Image (tube, rainbow, N blue to C red; front, side, top):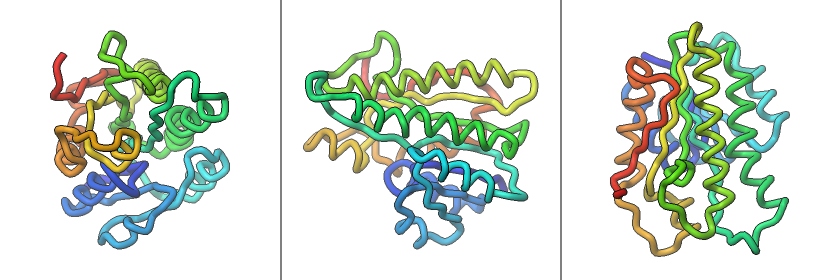
Length: 222
């Protein structure tokens, strides 16, 4: 049995992965702002934490005692489909607070609790990959996910001698509530439940083969 901490676990990919991990007998610590759905699942320890709030991150990390984390999956994120003209400082700050700053601060504060043989998996996007297809309206979201990729590569370098290992998955479109809100009517080729199987397996085993790597998880071409 492993101990997994999954952020953004209240819905979508995070919820599906948390449920699957609990069904497999692992200890699951699940973070979300809204934990109503998580409370209804046996085997999940749910924590209400706003990753845009530094104090809530600190309170959670301090309260997590006598725990060694084997897998940290930084899945939480905000998506906005907003043109350059329609964006502003406040919107940039809102997205980056969760997608970049919150991810980084939670990881930093949890590092003493993560096993040296553990695995930190950061969820990014194909939009954050240099040279990939880009779409209007995603400049804020995709640039934040590009930052996540660079952070992951640098953390892997810093901890390559001691562990844990760090990798990042750059996802193509996965059908989630967040995607449906940003792109009404669009149907992704992969569901959250389908992707959860891949994510759980990668979290548990990917660090045996990868460190500091960006894996592009997308069925679209190019």
